[in-house]
Image 1 (tube, one colour):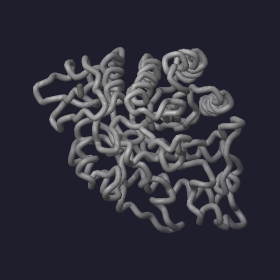
Image 2 (cartoon, rainbow, N blue to C red):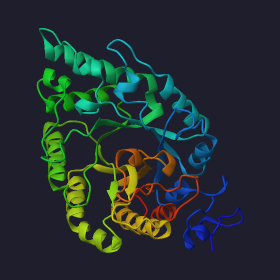
Image 3 (cartoon, rainbow, N blue to C red):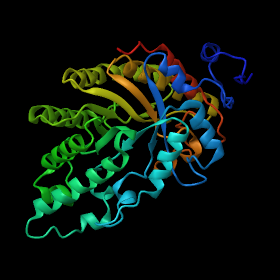
Length: 378
């Protein structure tokens, strides 16, 4: 029988009975953020400013945000290619709307991101820019101006930034290079300047390096490269406070528990190394690719939920982690489907809610993991 959470049920009751496929959640129910707050955690999600999508202008999606989130992050609206369409031009209109809606609903906002260290995600004008006879000076001025303009505009309204996103090449662990970093004399110099500028302009803010290294097999080189980068930041005295673990995790079939257990040792070794250097942890972009699972929705959703719960239990065992952010709440708008289709053509189901905005077992798994997490230090 489908379990529908009613207004009369307590949060404890809701967590005690897993949410079956197609359950509904009332707008006045205690949500995922409330489940986490009891342990000193926050829960949030990505959203868009574009109507009819994963947007606050879409009433159905906005309702999910209001039920479950205390923290928001713009999916695209703060990225260079959207925020800075030309060298001397900024367009803050879309992101300002997100900020205004968050303030109206008393939600915090994370800044994502101040620099995406990948050529294909930098604006075309910057990749083709003529840096002139003194390229390092010119490139430095562009980067400093960008970070200064953004951080000054939002001041203390943003208390956490992904300053740099995805600077490590997954296959090799080497650092990515862009036209900007080439002009500045290298990627390390570019990233250091980005963090030092962010710290100077937003000394109140948590400054995060964000990347998608994961616990599944095939990520060893990526993890090693991230550790080298973090070690270099510490050695050079760069003001980096935390590692954003994107958490685009991938199932490997029906034995979700067994596969998760097999990944845990190396993953804990990685997290121990990160926290041992004094870094905080954040889950910044959580969703689940349902690889290797049957097309049957009931079986598939259960596998996704079990796998995510094991992953979250590992992550939340680290007291250095306080924020859990989903990369979207609803399957209808997930980035994963258009990017990577299943071989059987079944629609992907990576989010806590299905394409019709109904709660799935994944939402229950997240709620239970948040509620069961050890309390964070004061």
